[in-house]
Length: 239
Image (cartoon, rainbow, N blue to C red; front, side, top):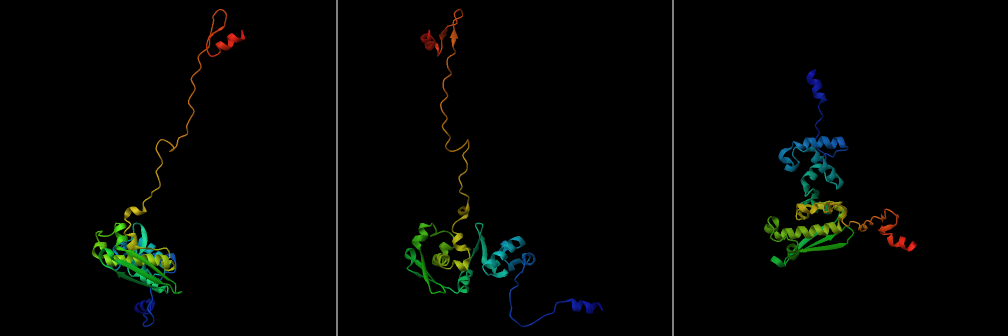
C-alpha cells in the first residue's frame, strides 16, 4: 500500500516535445528559483553563487529584455554598480529584434578604425566608428587588459556598442554595455554634487557697518545746560 501511494504521488515523467526554459510567473516563483540556483556552484557565475537576492534581481532584469533566467545570469554583469549586457548577448538581442549588425576594421596599428553598421528591420542603416585615435584620446590605448591584448577586438566592441545604443535602443531597453561601462572606471558613478560650505552660505549677505555709539550728553551741575555731546551745538542755538 505504501509503495502504491508513493508511486502515484510522484510527478509523471514525460518525453518528447519542445524544450523550454522555466519562466517564473510571480514573485514567489522567482524567489524560489533564485534560491535553488544560488546553490548551483560553478553552473552560475561566481558573483551570484549563494546570493539568491542578487540572482532574483538579475532574473527580473533579464525578463525585462526578454532573457530566460539562466540566460540572464550568464549575460548580465554588474559593472561599477550598473547592470550591463556583455559578450555575444548584445548581438543576440539585436538579431532577435529583427535587426542586423556587422563590424569591420580597416587600417593597422594607430591607423586602425572599426566601423559598425546597424541595419534595422525597417531598412534604415546607421554606422558608427571608433578608431585607435579615439582610444588614445579616451586613455584606453595600451591599457592593461583586453585593450593591450586584443586592441582590434576592443575597437569592434566599442563601435558595435555605439551603433546598437544609437540605432537599436528598442533591443537594449536601457541596458548598458559591459565592455563600455568597464572602461569608465569605478569613479565614473560617483556623486559630484558640491558639498555645502562650512561656516554658512557661499555668499554671505553684507551687513551694514555698525554706527559709532553717540557720545554721552553732559550737563552743567548748576544750570543744567548741555556742556558736551551731539546736542550741545543745537542747544546753544536754541538759547
